[in-house]
Image (cartoon, rainbow, N blue to C red; front, side, top):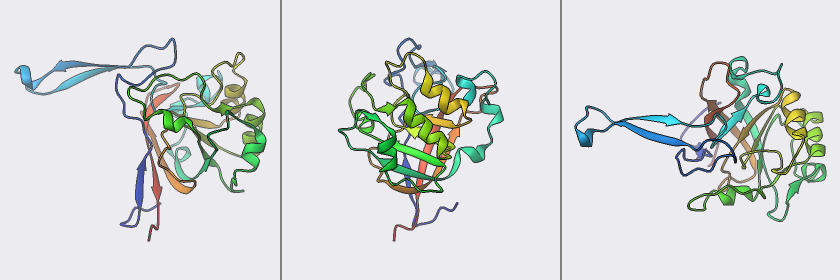
Length: 221
């Protein structure tokens, strides 16, 4: 992986702030001031309160599988490397296997980011939680496992439908050792091949963590 003058950096991370919606039932994101120079303190410092699964964040297998890997056990190499971004039409409400089959996913693709109409949602001010986001079905989860995908990234706060009752998609994806990135904003990213850099917070024994995620687009000339 290289970064040169011919490399474009796409920041696909949601701005982290209390304005971000969280999963219903999770505590809201809070950034509380601790000290402020404007009131005579020596420095500006703050305290952050948030769920581990908020904003742009990662899901290790231990998020849902008791014997799955937690953040400590996943090498950074899993989060960094070549990836493919595929785009699905705004009319698609749920991603089925035939959508994946026709998306032009490379035979050697192991990191796959799914760009859907969800990304347009993040331009709303203020952003709100949308229960009608585009997600995977159980059949498409099986397709991903069977085709050797090792990392998936989605542009909603979950890759499973909001009305799912059995968590079958999470159990299939994470239970197969695949890692996931949720809460991406891919609105300005064209389909194609990039280098992915995803750096989750290094939380010991973590079940998930907010992350900074960028895509590197090379050889623009």
